[in-house]
Length: 285
Ligand SMILES: [Ca+2]
Image (cartoon, rainbow, N blue to C red; front, top):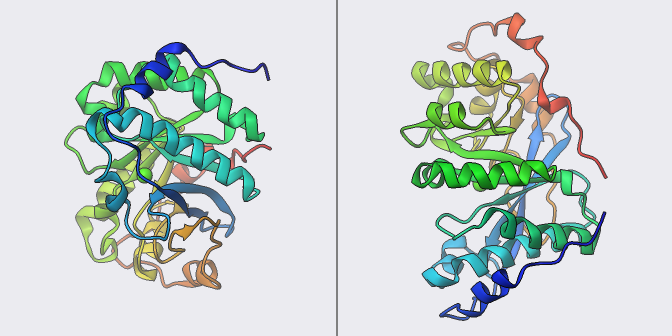
């Protein structure tokens, strides 16, 4: 791939940062295919150098430093993932409210990936609903720019905001991550089960991959399995690992596969199950 030069605008923006950027590193948390046990992707999460909460780092980032910090985060994530020999998809979070210019935003990412030989097509950018709602036209332009370079996008925390369906109407992401609040105790909640089943059906029809996040118990995982969710992330499968790529907890995938059917879920519509699924696309590189 041709080297890409970052524009002067980007440097100017970084240099007007008001506060120095805090020290930070990255943890990774896997997204696991519960049908095969394969790690489908790893999500990069900001952490203080010795471990702890992302809030401890983000609280030190001034408003005018958000963009520079966001760029640093993705560079760090890509470089660290490459140095750890990551093979699958790498999910990176868009920092809410960072000021992006579509073309500019993509250049440093392309440069970083190229520097360390990380395949561009394995990058997935997660955007929260709230971020999209703030300025959906602008964000759509950014996501189109990323897509034009072969990168993927995911709507994060889907279902947490008020306008999830409007988002999908305006821009079809590659991936939808169902908000962890929908997974909580889903096995005993007819409403959450129905909503999740609906999202799964909708996404299959639109060729969008579904990921359930915040999966904490075997019962939740079994209920998600029974409404057709195949990709799961959460403490049940693996906690985030500081500067390492965690594998799923030993035996957990087999336990999910063998878990009793969820009594409330009922049989999953076989016709839906035959639709093509983006999960069949394997990461390159
Ligand atoms: Ca996320």
